[in-house]
Amino acid sequence: MAATGGAQAHWSSRFAFLMASVGFAVGLGNIWRFPYVTGENGGAAFVLIYLACAFGIGAPVLIAEILIGRRGQGSPPSAVANVAVKSGRSRHWRFIGGMGLLAAYTIEIVYAVVVGWVLWYLFKAVTTGFIGMDGVAAALEFEAVLADNLGMLFWTLVGLAITGLIIYSGLKDGIERAVSVMMPLMFLLLVGLAGYNYFAGGFAEAVTWLFTPDFSKIGPTSVLAAIGQAFFSISVAMGGMMTYGSYLPRSTSIGSSVLIIVLADTCVALLAGLVIFPAVFHHGLDPAAGAGLIFQTLPVAFAQMPGGYAFSILFFVVLAVAGITSMVGLVETVNHWVEERFGIPRHKSALLVVGSIAVLSVFSALSYNLLGDMALGGRNLNDLMDYFSNQILLPLGGLFIALFAGWVVSREDSRDELTSLHATAYSLWRFLVRFVVPPALLVIFVAGVLG
Image (cartoon, rainbow, N blue to C red; front, side, top):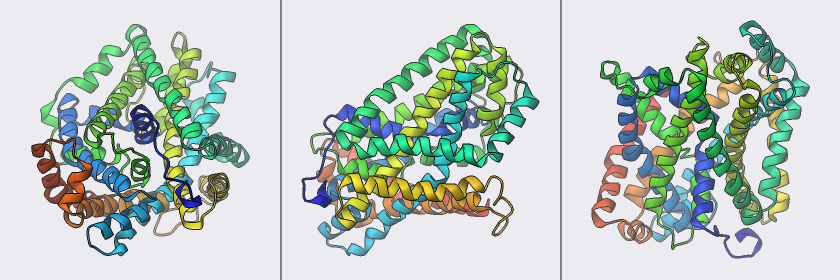
């Protein structure tokens, strides 16, 4: 690519860009957290607030990030620096791109282990189908997973190997080919599994949980949850969208693409709710189980439901796709920078980046057992990396992206990238990114720091 003397690579189609972007945005946390937060905060009433926040806060930052990537034509630090220079400002603004790189790399170290759990549970689903699993057995099973360092390392490496192979193969032969198959497959499986639940039981309760508006539950906490969900769920400030934006041809509309990405991300999360929560309600399980819902609660439901063997396999295939496509976006962000910064070909940079993540993920895996008692400020290694990335880097990164796009990038440059937007829509975006997004993200940052 650019770093090795060739022209900047570009997506071959808008479809490929959209599938890659939605795949990056839809992660494991989305699939279990968004439906639960929706149900806990007023169902449809919360969805309305979330959509307002998604389009008023998340979408403007996403537009800004893709705009900077396409305008700057480089890895996140280079793209920001190039755009700043074009607008007559200092290259030192590249620190914003550096924050995204650091966030992507930090998140990937922990995320790779969790994706390894998903692949391991997919293997368990294929080999056992969780037959005879009850609550106690499911808890013991997950405890055994966390205690088995060799097992965690093996499946983490399997996930990284799949991701590395996709990155190694290039933009068109690797990322495009993978997401063009994996994302439609995930959508089809989600629709099919939700349709199955319509007949299997618990569907009406799940629909009530997700879509019955309860405005009595709406308050400051719900609004804050909506702001946070709108920002975190579309995966901005991790450098991935900026990297994908650098591959975007000028002929593709950023505004309409962002509209599709945000709507698709929301639809996937709600569909996931119609896959997960009917089984939870039908079998009297706890919808508030958090991350444990996937690995401790749902296996009990699979063991009890008709067709649970096939359902469990397809469900963990969906999770595996969501995890791998998110990992691809995170790794590609760092890989593009390594290519550019050190002038090495993609094949070598992919091996270097994935190899370094594999080494560091060992410490992440050990933090669940052997290194669990090694803590700083009451947080072990995983907790520290999670806090640093999600509570510090992401909200601050999004804040600086908004400030940069709204106040540093010249109006002429941003308008040139957003020519497909109507003048009124462009003025609204510029207003939101200058005056609405920064205070909202500052609230997220302060709330995260204060817990």
